[in-house]
Image (tube, rainbow, N blue to C red; front, side):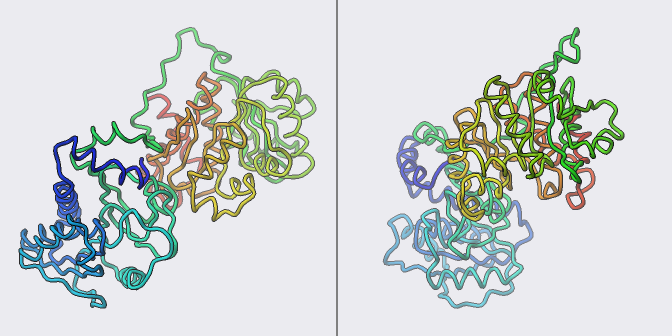
Amino acid sequence: MFSADQVRDHEAQAAKQSGLSLYELMESAGAAGFDALRLHYPDAQRILVLCGQGNNAGDGFVVARLAKQAGLHVELILLGDPARFSPDTKEAYHRWQTQGGNVSPWPHAINAIDVIVDALLGTGTQGPLRPPYQQVIEAVKLTQIPVLSLDIPSGLYADTGASGGEALSADLTVTFVGIKSGLVTGQGKQQSGKLVFADLGIAAAFDSLAISSARLLDFNDLPSLPPRARNSHKGSSGKVLCIGGNRGMPGAIRLTSEAALRAGAGLVKTLCHPENRPLVYQGLPELMLADADSLQVQLNWASCIVIGPGLGQDSWSSALLNQVLDYVTKHPKPILLDADALNLLATCRTTLPCQCILTPHPGEAARLLGCKIQDVENNRYQALSQLQKKYQATVLLKGAGTLIAAQQQHWVLTNGNPGMASPGMGDLLSGTIISLVAQGLSNDEATMYGASLHSAAADLAAQQNGERGMMASDLLPFIRQLVNR
């Protein structure tokens, strides 16, 4: 992905190197938008194009002209001042008029329309919207008409996916030259709808000029895990110690432990509150139980540790966390902190031992950074960077478009679906990641692979039975399936 500034700074040079003028690039963008319109809305006959004042409006004029040439009924509402158009936008506007196209001012009725093409505002949007743009967006949002946004939904901030107030929610967004980082995570992922990328024929030149700010991570692009040696034994696939499950919260650490087994760890022990031992162990005889009284022995035994699911925040849990972190400081080994381990961490420590993985959701991230949840969601990339800098760890920030800071790079998960918004998903994720650490992957590799695998398993579960009603335990058979692909 790229920032809006990167696209603005490099697209002209990339076009020149590719033998294209900026107007030809605008024509290509409009053609890509029209092609997407015909592909995704083949029955649409009545099109409304909303144009602002920038080059985004020029793309809209091209779409309108091509739609009219194809015999569609096209209405065009113009909010911008033609006297302030760039030369390329003026040319696109002139060609629309030459084709016999008319423009209507705002206000204008929006009815009897099959698809709205959004070419109001581009990637330069910052701050609250001014009239009449805010009123147009509010009017569109009151309709049930599908919206196709060109480059970015109007009002959305290209770099973060946040907005200063009203922003259009597109059903389909066709983004050009480079995928904007704000379209793939948080609010931006929701408001951009289905995302289509069109490089406009300048991808090779552009990629040679701009350095990506983040990269997409898709499980289907990752290699399969290597086959196990014929003479493998339990110990050769790692020993995982899972710590959590305070009084009244046995389910979280049970899910973590079972995910660690299903993802292929050789041996898994669970240390939970004594009252929960029968509940954690029930129905899972492959799981071993550990005792807090022998914590030193258990820590010596483990090749890696996960702590936090169901841990709670009382004296029992804080004492356990402090002992574990003190041990790992003196005897370095990989450790993953999740859930209440992160909440406790936010109140007591600013540094961590080496080889740590942190997997916060936005609320936990906000506590770790001493800010509000909305601050995290308004700029998830910035929050990720701050967490990584503060704790010097591999960091995974959960949410729509999960972010990972690993291998000196930001990554954005493409797998996953809304059905994952259910209890225990994070606990399952922790077990999957730590299992891969136990099997020999580095913290960075395990976090990237495990998060992708976990989300891909959720996609398979959704394909089989739908998103609504999905439970974390539904993913376990698919986790096993995918680690053996």
